[in-house]
Image 1 (cartoon, rainbow, N blue to C red):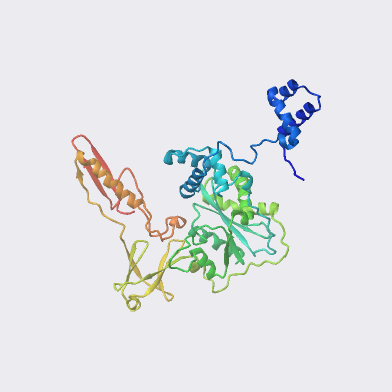
Image 2: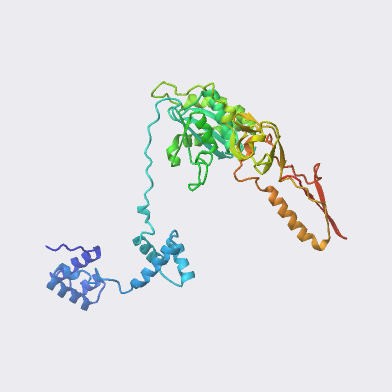
Length: 463
């Protein structure tokens, strides 16, 4: 038995033709209802009497369209899209095919071809990823989620800054909050040290894939694949885990949303507009927040461990890098030449490796086998530019040179060195303050003179 699939229009046609065949409709009435001529109505009647209902099905069904594109054109277009426009949408790819290859096809035609080739997905096929809820950890201190939230915390009263959030996974308690200028390694050193001194050492921290917590370069050469923050936690016997998606650390993400609503309004009522004032206010806010939103853990144990006597937080939370001492008892760090003072301890260190300790409070030590080595510094970036008198016709060239020098000084000192915003102004790698009125002490003034005007430009010695 053959099953026939008919469209609604074909079913309506079948009803009219059956009424025509049984004499309930005249040829003129049937033709008017079918919107055909009477001659065509008689032809449909003859086809119905010969083949039955299948005779009324369109004979074009299952056959290729007479207006279809040649298969070779489809293969050419798909090959071009796969080679040059694989991540393009159908509309943009259609435009580029016309502009760059003189191939004109319809947008919807191209969309169907791309879907058939697996280069595009229909909206119904783009299912959102499923993130099923994860059961909380059982004990306080078993897993601490950490994250930095960059936001206009002071609205229009102060600068944009970042809030470092530490939240317990088992109870959703805010364990520690700290406002910082940016999300840097030294800022996390400060915040994590304060957390450990207050609560003790948790089993593990849970973070995103920020460069502070995870080495971003998969093909990185050298090193142990561990960031400075990860190395500090390893020395203190604390693990750190990185979430693959933001939904995986949903508790701290939802806490950020709550803080961006409630904390901002609380600080507005208190008139807080600086980072120091905000850090002084957050302990009181945390106490009230935890009383409202924290829940009890399923296991009452507290897995925070006290700091051991051998846990040296100063050395653990310091940026450490190894350097090789030259035969002249010198080494370089962050484009600064460190000259070791010759004595009975430093003389045998030629061609050996020492460790540079860059502390968050701005101190810097060079150490070998637990001994601090005396040193003095020579900053290679500090230069002296001689004053020059430039004629008006050479002013453009001179200004271009000045802009180049300023750009070089604006650049960071070293790509591998830590970002020192978290150290404030306490470190030794400082840039001179720039003033428009006069050159600070130790700076030279370059004068561009002409018969009509004078332009004074300050050239700074430091970066």
